[in-house]
Image (cartoon, rainbow, N blue to C red; front, top):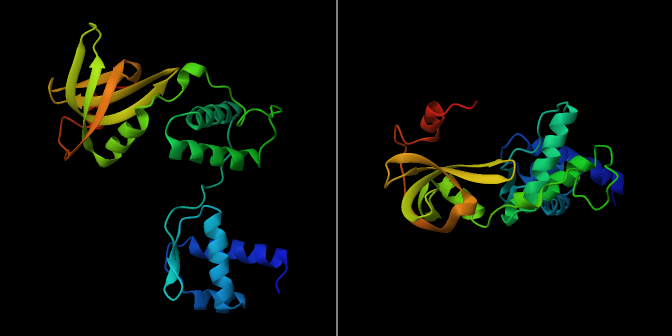
Length: 226
C-alpha cells in the first residue's frame, strides 16, 4: 500500500497532468504512475472532494474543465489590503455561491501569507456594515451573465416609484454604495441605479442581443472613468 507522501505526490502529479484540459484515460494514468486503474478512480474522487472541477467517469476518462492556478505574482501592501477587503465584503454578501468561493479563496491565501493576528477575522480587513451585499445582487448578476432582461421597480431621485424593463450591464461597489448600470428600454437611455433604491427585481425570460449603442462599452465611452 502506498504511504501518504507517495499518494500526495501522485495527486499533485495528476493535477499537473490534468491542467492541459485534455481527456485522460484512467488506464493511461495508471500506467504512468505505476498503480492500478482502481487507484486512479479513488484519486479522482479525492481530487473532486477538494473542489476541483474534474469531469469524467470510469471507462471514459477524466478532464479538468476550469483553470487551476493563477500565475505567480507579487502584491504590494495596498494591493493585498484591497484583496482582503474585497473578499471580506463578498463573503458577507447574500450571493451564497460567491460568498462560499470568497471564504475558500481567503483560506488559501491566508495559508501562504502572514497571520493577521485577529482570529475572529475572515482574512484581515474590516468591511463596513453598510457594504453588505443587497439581496438583489445574485439575481442581477445571473441576469447580466445570461444577458436577460429584468423588470425593475425603483425610487427615482424625484421620489416617484418607477417601473421599467432594463438590460442589466454592470454591478459596482464604491465605498458602501452598490450600483447597477443598465440600459432602460422605457427611457431609451443608460441609467445608474443605486441598489438601495430598488424595491423589486423581476427576472424576465427574454434575452437581449448585442446592439451598438446599448452595451457597457458604449456607456463607458460616454462616461469615461475620472
